[in-house]
Length: 498
Ligand SMILES: *[C@@H]1O[C@H](CO)[C@@H](O)[C@H](O)[C@H]1NC(C)=O
Ligand SMILES: *[C@@H]1O[C@H](CO)[C@@H](O)[C@H](O)[C@H]1NC(C)=O
Ligand SMILES: *[C@@H]1O[C@H](CO)[C@@H](O)[C@H](O)[C@H]1NC(C)=O
Ligand SMILES: *[C@@H]1O[C@H](CO)[C@@H](O)[C@H](O)[C@H]1NC(C)=O
Image (tube, rainbow, N blue to C red):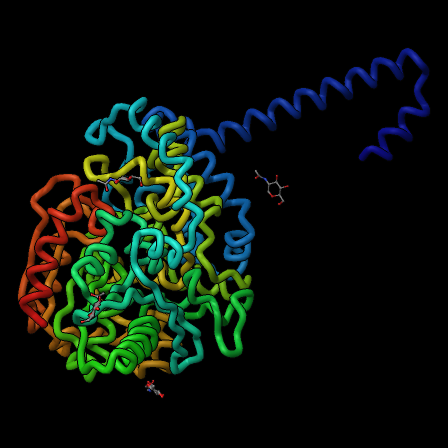
């Protein structure tokens, strides 16, 4: 068209030429304005509606839209995965209400809200006063020594080749094995300090304390033939942690201490992986005198964590894509976490301080039991690394309402399990005595889901609901009043079941 226009202009006299150019320009202007107008009418309709209905969410949603539509992951999916994905992306990117729907039928929980109202200046001052704490940079074995205990480091290789590190605080008493949760490590049981951490409190009482580390966390990033840079290294969920890691660590511990059985305390995923072991490898129940579940996670229909819920829709698709891209580890600095931070915490210094950590954002927190002075130490030790498949497997349990093995999609399930849906974990085979600690405000472990587990366990010897509002997922290990709220009861149970 430009070529034709130029040819015609050549034939025109100069005044005609000027007029023609002006006409051409005005045409283009009109055309451009109409185009822009049409474009904005089409694209802005839903956004304007969104702005009016959800003013607070609008900014975050625009950011989500831009990121997700431009994300290599999602672009790739658009080309290959057809209707299911189109549906998911549409619902994620169009309007805020759809974002909320993708995350779950319940509202996106806000971390800093009216109910959780706090004195901002006090919080910031407490946080600032903890910044110089050297414990933030000391490794866990150095912390244990600093807190006045001897420490040993042990290594064990699993059946499928992962090299796991365990820490031990040797003692004359019976053996207690501690297992951490999602994105956690042995550090979780030490960083609350000499007066409040479970490992130190048990050591003070003379117990022989063993601290496990699941494959993929910072202490267990080795394999006899795979490297963490390879996708295959990250091809595991908590199913493998329960099936291979726990049996290997427990056998090693019993062999080294020359004992027949031990007591097990797990937090969060440390309970999930135990329930996997107890049902898939029931012979291990005889090696457990007592299992204490701090915030038990198995059935997850009522789970409230936004990052986990976000993995629920289209989980199998996300997994397939991650495999193609070779991205298998949860990266806490990802865009998704940044966006969720805006959505759940808003902006400002308080949000920067409290919501900058992927773990806190994933499992939530409350202010009543949070030791803000200790936050810099916590941030120095978590998150500790995990595979995307761990999160995706949790996401699947939200949708299915079952406690079952990883869902690879009907075709692959048929090949792997011999059935279209993955098999449920036979929870009734867990014959070891189990004690459950849970609370109302825990995002990862909802009372109704705990009740479902309780009804299926054949040997649940104690179930205890923490009598405090706002007691949340991390308070089960880091509460300011851990000693009186949790440890007192733990101690009684351990004594009763040796
Ligand atoms: C989309 O991605 C491209 C290439 O990575 C980048 O240059 C561009 O700024 C991105 N756009 C948005 C809206 O994020
Ligand atoms: C274990 O017992 C021995 C002797 O019975 C004692 O010397 C030692 O201090 C005890 N160690 C601990 C950690 O209690
Ligand atoms: C048990 O420990 C002994 C040494 O204390 C070691 O020789 C043996 O290989 C261990 N067995 C297992 C199964 O770890
Ligand atoms: C809170 O954390 C600080 C800094 O680590 C520590 O000194 C203090 O003892 C902790 N408070 C409680 C109740 O554990």
